[in-house]
Length: 260
Figure 1 (cartoon, rainbow, N blue to C red):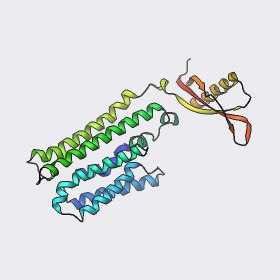
Figure 2: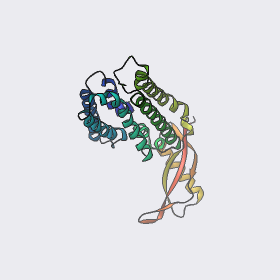
Figure 3: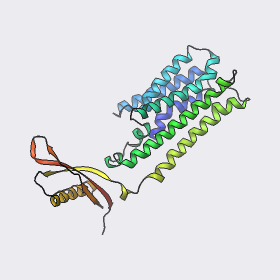
Figure 4: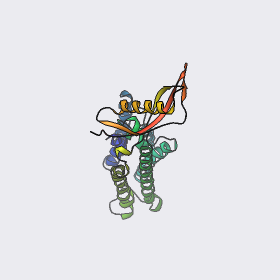
């Protein structure tokens, strides 16, 4: 549901545009974008890429709506709205903030968020959405570039309604299906997830003592009903600040149901 919350301004805009005056569609979408951003700040969540990008996108579209001609709006507002979400999604990806990861990590335990598999799945899904947005933008730009009288209100000319509506929203639906199905196919079983942690040991501790401390620390983290296995420690500990007699050691482990 989180990602739907992020898409809300665009979804509302695409539903309204062409069915109500352009000014009404863009103002409603801008209001929802601002409200979404405000709710995120009240809840203390970081400013997610889609939320910030939605506010910026619909501010620009609002200015255009009240300054350009009606014919321009009918030809270009659809491709401009899809170009907006494409730029936002691609920009976040290039800045190291894939929007899918920002939503997916909410409520997930630290070991899941920091796992390599989580990073791969969220990166792949973000690229799928970016590709879908790119396809939507290209498709919706074809009618005004190829056909001079193109308009999003035209239901008679196949070039118009197919490129403005059919292809873009088919791509949107396919991306949504991929977001639903791929994580289930790619996600490893719980027992295969490698969890990362650290534990503290005295600087002179030997390897068997380190392994014992790492295992006991992992047991405390996994809680009742489960047990850690495949416990491994890093190659070097880091002295604690202000206490050189003890070191912080990195370790990893996997979790399985506790054997009876």
